[in-house]
Amino acid sequence: MADGGGIKRGGMIKQSVRTAAAAQKTVMHDVDLGAACMVCHDCNGFELHFWRKKCKHCGCSREEHNIDYVPGWNRPKAKLIQSEEDNVKAEKPKPAKKRTPEERKQLEHQDPAHDHDADQCTGLGDENQIKNFALLNDKRNDMYGQGRDAGEAKHDHTGKVCQKCTAPSKTFVAGDKVIEAELSDGTTIARHEACFCCANCKEQLAEYNFYEYEKDIYCGRCHAEMFMPRCAGCDELIFDPTYTVAEDKKWHLVHFCCWVCDVDLCEKQYAKDPESNPVCLPCYNEKYAIVCATCKKPITAGDKAMRAGELSYHHTAECFQCKVCKQGLENKKCVQLQDGTYCSECFHKVHAPPCVRCKSKINGEFVQVKGKRFCKKCFTCFECSTPFTREEKKGAYPIGEKLLCYTHAKAAKKAEIAAKKAAAREAALRPKDAAKIEGSSQEARKVNDHRSFVRRGTVTMKNKAPAL
Image: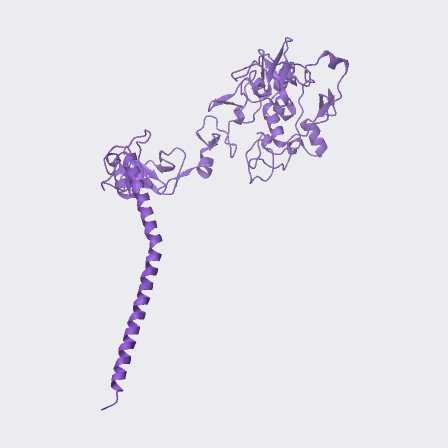
């Protein structure tokens, strides 16, 4: 039921883009102009592309911006499951729900407004296409429904089976949140809330909105694509009998064009941007061409390129060469590091250290322990030469500069502990011995001083004896 350009649905009016434009006193193209992008940080605000459902500044879709409203849909009131008690006493309309940006994004993606509102479609070329659009819209409205919380409807499903549950036990237990949905043939399905999802894309249905098709439920986007193809450029359903197919996607003839400058690409060579969108060759060379790691010049579209790890090179001997010996690397083994690409021989000379045990170059497999490399034949116990394995107590135990087996490592550890204890005892006894030695030295000095004094006194007395 229309009301001032809005659609009355479930007791509340949802705006159409025309109503929103009138309320904002702007043209329909400028609705939500300047809305902040929730993905990009350098977007200047939402500005709708003249036919794509994307922002001109950042390329993100409309639903990825913090939009102010959720557009209405030209379809009847949702079919809700109601018990006899509900029919006797009608519920009061619920107040409009305040949705988060993430919830609005999910609603916009699962059921695009341009699948229902011809005013938002740029691909409808004539009256016949507009008529077919309206017929399909009416047909899909009859397949639309909305699930309902069984707890609010006071329906007990304990012990019953969930039709789409992937858990080992598919039966409902007390406390499970169950969602009911009534199909067109009068049957009622009941599923766990997490299982109430689209049969095609497997996304959980936002606010339990669904469309029925062959006794299963789908989101609006997947449901519409069962009847008409969707243009990968404008995201609208294609009602034109003539369209093109490229990159496993379908396009309006006028919408298969460069993602940067909008030049037509039908029957022309093109490249793909990092998100696999079609781009003309000049725009690709200017914006997305990869730089050669050797000559630092762009690898333009159509040029052959070689790739080693994260680095790309022109497919020439002058560019794709070893950083050390300057020999071409095509059809040769090479190693790529952050600073360049090396042939196998030069890499071992520059970056591969020798085995710390036998001091020979490591060719092939090696084992690295605490930053030290061991060739496979040297990865044995330093004492008994037992090879190390991954079995319990048969691995390598680093003790000092050596790798030991469990037995010798245990013995070495015991010897180390015993040596530490002996050193501790020696350190504890050393101060007492030093004190005894110091005391003995002081007593010896006192005795010697006394004896020296006595000798000196005797000599003095002899010198002072009276003469006869």
